[in-house]
Image (cartoon, rainbow, N blue to C red; front, side):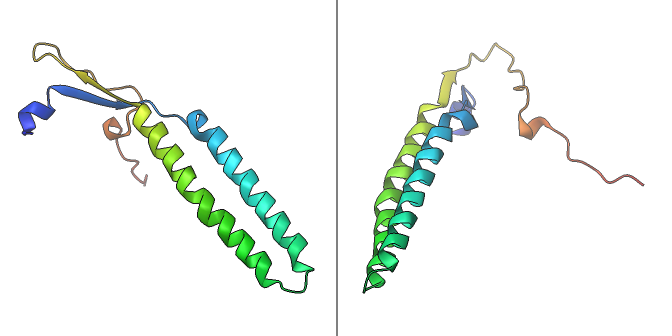
Length: 105
């Protein structure tokens, strides 16, 4: 793919925090429940089971969390063809169009 082919398409990411907010809440609940079960197991004769429980829950839930994030991100990327005759306008709120802050004085 050459540079001229890339300029014929417009890539826009429409992902907002609200799109992943539920996923973050579910994962925080999962971690909280695993820590609660670890504290319950700490009183047992072998506290190693408590640490193993937390490690296992985090290890098994992290791939699902990453998969959910990546698929949500990919679902919010829009690729639209742009005609060479149309003029592209900068997207409002696009960070690349903003000027950096300069110190006064």
